[in-house]
Image (cartoon, rainbow, N blue to C red; front, top):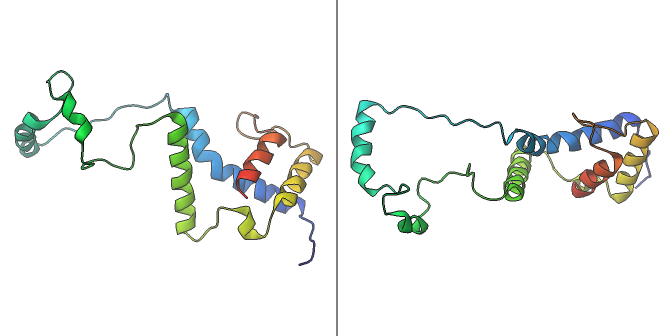
Amino acid sequence: MKNRKLSARAVVSLMLSAILFCMPIGAFFANRTNTIEVHAEDTAEQKTESASDAENTVTPGNGREENSGTDTGEGKTENSTEGTTEEKADKAIAKTREFFESLGVSTHLKDYGLGEEAVDKIVKQLEDHGMTRLGEKGDVTPEVAREILTRAL
């Protein structure tokens, strides 16, 4: 295969794609303290149904806490808030990758014929064009960009 130079436009496009791929993770970290709780009110019909179920509900202080470890998984969703920040971030990355791949969009640079040498060229182009402080807060340096691109291989 012929060696081809990446144009500045292609370099910027690849870098932006990598950054956009990682934005949900950044948003997760940036907004984790800005959450609110929202509760919907039950209808009268739902209240009578839930009253009969309340006897079996595990709530703090009702003496049934020891049974909470035997959960069968029913009623659990994939939007669990359990786990460390790193586990949540890994789950968000996996879900984002799964979403893009379900659309037929590859999430690895190697699938586009790019390898480690392309990462070096992209980072050099960023430095040559003075793009050394990227991102909303300017904290995406060429070193961070290299790490992002290397993980995307």
